[in-house]
Image (spheres, rainbow, N blue to C red):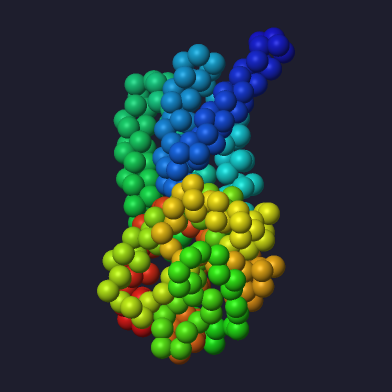
Length: 286
């Protein structure tokens, strides 16, 4: 085999992997649900494997180069923050090699059919049970500490909670107008407030800081374009956000009637399917 042919057979799977990496990354603009990324990546690499096996050639090197771009991109971006998602790399690698060798011979067809069924069962469990539970554990922290002192500036009209009120429960959502997960979380909070609207002792407030260039005026403009439906406030210099121990957005804190922080939740991903249920249950028990 000529050197040129070897190089082509090596680079073609890698180039194909880069192409489909772009497609999978593009899917994140449709939804931030990590499960969609897992499923789309597996399907993409399985199809890539079929194509590469038929057009480029089969081999362990080809399979490795094919799944390398997507696996490396996932490892250096998402796994750094959420290491418990490492089985994603296993699913994608197995899907790649099943596709690559599936049509390699009738003698092994039964083995690859069994491997495909096993992969489907494991992937279903991973997406339905494992990811939602692990995301909930990673993002939520149940506490019972005294809430720090803070004071917000009112941004919206009407009665806006600026600090914790004795005898009332306060739900604070630290928000940024440029933060996509923050925006995707808002409908959940609005739905929770609506479900608990008969509870006059529970207050909600959406709080922006100066991170990322946000200002009170920018928050008001955002609320005009996309009505938030919740009281708005501003945390000058992000002092309260830092005092609660948060570093990212969105960040949610629940303060009970006695002025104690009962829950801190940082980040939002729609794969955390019990977010609404768990928050409602907590608020009803306080």
